[in-house]
Image 1: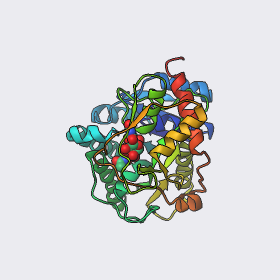
Image 2: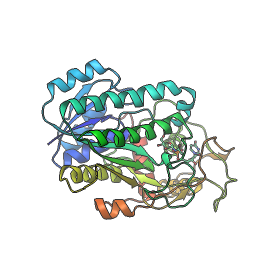
Image 3: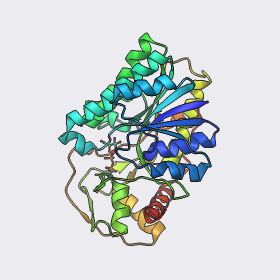
Image 4: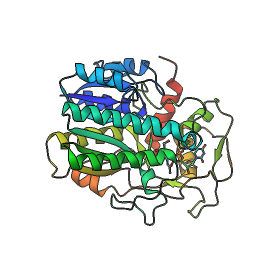
Length: 338
Ligand code: UD1
């Protein structure tokens, strides 16, 4: 079966392409390389022995997208990753985010309806829960007003799927990721931030390797045991495997629902300081960091209730924080060495 993966050379996309190919699916990638490089495809080939078909297309280019779909007659399902994801940047450039994430998805869904492609896996985020009233968050926890344009684009994407599935044959699985980190064991693919990283783990590994001088911990006066924010870090390979299970469930028609939502996290919360401690433990390095002020828009604590994904998808996060830190570090050391 052939699966279209948008954003397939990106961080989560590339790991998912590997797991799809290892499970016997054929993959075609659409990516505009705005936040990834084509060499990722070479490395996917090195890992799996199969080179996915690659098309450099921007989802906002509706003409190019229509041309692509005209030539494709055997796509069974789509996994949609292609989107911008930097929270701070989205606050500064909201229209860029609405255009890229929303227009791109509308163009894609239009083509799927035209083509009669019915199965869709959507990359969403725990950001839709905002500051949750109760932890851990279940899929039934209320969706809160978005804190950023990025977060709102994820909510709009989810809503478009509900609305479209009510009037078409579209079926979708919405996957709400917690904090993806780690890298492939081969160190051939991983997160490749452009410029100064926004996210914690790439900032840690770049500091440790000497690319950044010092990590700033964004506040230690929160109402948590050590005062720093708590997040549910999830290994990207575990996450990638969940996509394959979600896809299988849809293709097997195992669900009665047109739209299903799953949280993807480990169910465990770790503070920023615990992440640093884990990194220092597995690498034997001392990280240069200081305590700074709070970052605006950060929620205090969030972690996932994993029961639904465990019971319905049969998916369990297998890799712990130490493993995430070790593979992230191995990847950081490997970057640029291919
Ligand atoms: C954010 C989004 C998430 C999105 C992800 C993708 C929210 C609530 N979460 O995750 O939906 O999918 O970005 O980019 O909008 N930290 C430091 N120092 C640093 C960097 C981070 O202390 O230099 C802290 C943060 O304040 C936070 C934790 O580390 O407490 C994790 O931050 P980060 O990796 O940026 O992820 P989120 O903000 O949780």
